[in-house]
Image (cartoon, rainbow, N blue to C red):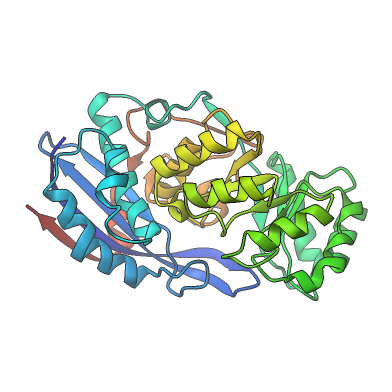
Length: 369
């Protein structure tokens, strides 16, 4: 498979409401789309999930644009790619920059699936045609507003609810949610807001029967999480700490957690995610697919990944309308009774909504042989 050209687009879409975490707030979503064209006229699409500021990882929209335009895309134009899994090795010369790598790697997976005439989820080894999903709810101004969002999620069949917590807005919040929703499959996401000094405080979450506590300690930490997990009955889920297969292997060796959240963008692509999936499966760790406030293209790739055998927990992938008034794809990703059904068309299975696609494009460049 020979790539003839890439188009790199900068997009800007406004979310329906701000998404707040312990790091900050996002409403205007600036992001990148990579289009990969082959010599048969096929086009594959990939989305870059980096934010404008380096609060989730060290990458930003600007750094990813630089790495893609000046290094990664020119490199791949000079190579014959026999299979999308080759991209992982071809880009290994560039250290880290996982979100930039994932943007182009997913575009090539989509392109490859279209060339062979199969849905992406089948090509990557998926085993189910529908996935269970939950919802992630950011910090809300009032408890009543939080209840409204939980009620709306449950009304749409969400299989579990994740709420954001931070010091000063955590234990009492969980207690009041549990009082109102005693049987709710509930998890909390701390986004690295705590340290080992908070161990006694974090142990107080155990009576609330949480599915998991996601990333309570440092984003680059595995060892301290291992120490914390020994003291908690609540399962720890590692998110930001797992950026590669090597990180996953280290976490498993140290018993640092019981669950991995796998995000394509964070680990550098679908192939790295598949390798982590295999490693976690051998170690009997549970997996689930995380979300990155993606538009439709990134959302479609995330949905495809979570059809792999051992993604057993509900994914963090809401329907398009949860975040945006309109999406880049047609039809949009839809949640029905807590499930997303996979399309059967080749590639990601969705068409581009050309009108919206052009409307939200603020810049594009072509990179050719």
